[in-house]
Structure formats: C-alpha cells, structure tokens
Length: 389
Image 1 (tube, rainbow, N blue to C red):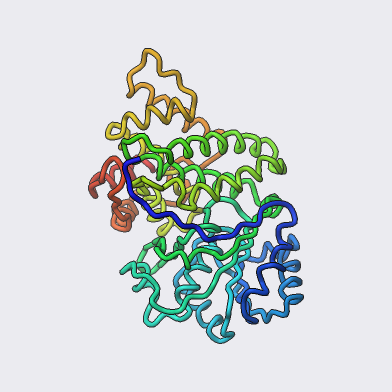
Image 2 (spheres, one colour):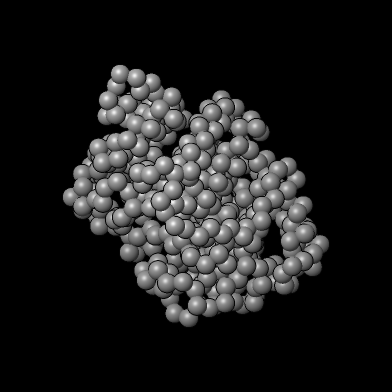
C-alpha cells in the first residue's frame, strides 16, 4: 500500500434479530429530549415506530418528531427540522429509516446550532462544523447507503438543481450507535431493495477503481463484491431470505464505513453523475447510479485497463488466458451489465425522467472528481450523459 492514512470509526453497531432492544443500553447516555426523525410513515405500518416510541418513553425521553423526510432530503426540510430541534432543545437525534433519514439526521446534527446558512457553509463551502453538534443514533430499515457508519450527508437543493454530499472529516459526525436488524428490511418493495443493492456495489467500485499499487483494500473490496453478487441473486429469488438480506445489510455497512478507502485515492464520479441526474429528476439514488455506470466505466476503462481486467477475473471469474487486458476487461463489464439486468435495474436515465434537453444542465450540476483513472472534461460529461439516455 502506497498511501498514508488515518482510520477511525467510533460507531457502535448492534446487529441481528431483536437488536432494537439495545436502545435501552444507549438511550440513558443522553439527555431527556430526543428528535425522532423518520420518513413517509412506513415505520408506522410495520410496527417499528410503536416499538421505538415505547422504548423512548420507557427511558423517560421527551420526543420531538421530525417526520416526512423524503428519499432525497431537501434543504427546505433541513431548515424545518432545525426549527423543531431548536424549540425542543434536543439532546439526541434518533434516525429511524433508510440512508436518506440517516443522512438528513447528520446534516441536522451539524445545522441545529449553526450560525449562518448550513447550505452555504457545508454544501457550497464544504466547511466543518464550528458549532456544537448533536449526537446521532440510527435504527436502519433499508440497506444501501452505509450512512449508519459514516459521516456523509447528502442534501438536495431543487432551486439550484444541486444534490451534494458532504463527508464530514470529524468523527463526531458519525453516528454514536446504529441498530441493524435485517428483519426490518424485509418489508421493502423489490425496486427499493435492488436499488439499494446497486448503491452498495457502486460504493465499492468507486473506491476500487483507483490506484495502481498492490493494496489490501482492493482485496477486501473484491470479497465484498463477490459476497454481494451471491446474496443479491438469492434475494432476487426470495426477498424474504434472511441470510441473503443479512449479508446484504452487513456488506452495505462495510462498503462505505471508510475501511476499503484506506490507502486509496478513490473515484466517486459515478456518484457525481448520478446525483446530478437525481437533482433534475428526483429519482431513486441507486437507480441513478445504475443508469450512468456502464457508459462511465466504458469511457474510463482504457485509462485503468489493468484494474478493470483484474475486476473481471477476481470478481466475475472471467478466464484471462489467451486474452488481452482489453478483451478481459470488456468481458467483465459485460458480466456486470448482465447482473444488473438480472436484478431489474434501470439502465438509462430516460427511464428516470431525464430528457435530451436536460443534458447540458445536468452536466453543469456534475462535480468533477480528481481521484479516478481519468479526470473528465465537461465535454466528456456531456458525452457520457448522452450515452446514458
């Protein structure tokens, strides 16, 4: 490994059936007022809400609810939550939901006591919090983002046509604890499950497709990808397969808790493209990634040919004997495409609501990253987006 790095992950995880009971261990560590953050109300239908409230009340907590957090949380929703949390003088933010709810809660943590506009401070200037932040705990109901064990928070500004993620540098922005019960994910619709699976896979790819050295992180990434492929196929056959869904949930956490980024420059351009598409269409995050991935990877493959060939062999089992790196790498991307279609993923941005007249605007909203095998020009971004239609 050639890179120098610092690694710290302070999040405590409670994993498995009945993990929610561990809230009784964590809640006494914090003050009386809790901001309970959740989404559109599915947790009220499946009973999770009732159990969480029961445990909060049993621990003597006062509850300030911030409900209706949408799949792509908006800056307006953040402002709304800030006011609720301020009025209640909250001591803890408890996120109950998927990655968007967890992301939102971390943004809220940094914003409740923020002087000035958090959008400008955190999402335009990318500053770190200088104010007192609130501790965050998560009860995860969807596997995909890995937000339960990282310091990332994505917020959308529709007025500016921007969807931006801030990965905070300070470990205090990571959740203090996260509850991961795979059974909580079993009621999700197939579309959301498959979108989450591709989000996980692409998180790994974004870190894997960078660097040329022999890096332990890459071996970890290959194992995670192979595990996810096997589990995704099992889940695709039976969404109630607990073993498959538990493996998917665990892989999601390790895909983006910064471990496999150690010693890597990382890429993240697929996410920048997908988030820009999402800012225009409000489409499901994992599907925006799926829709732009193959055009992007085929575009940069010549610049990272050896890694793409290794990906084909070590992840997809392509036989490299008698083939050039280009042939092997191309076959690997073909197998990736086959797997994506097998899962029923969206393969173009047109299906997500993007139109040719949006391409220039989406390109303007796409941040250009530096860590991958090719730093794109704006013209290349436009080309990739056109190939994604």
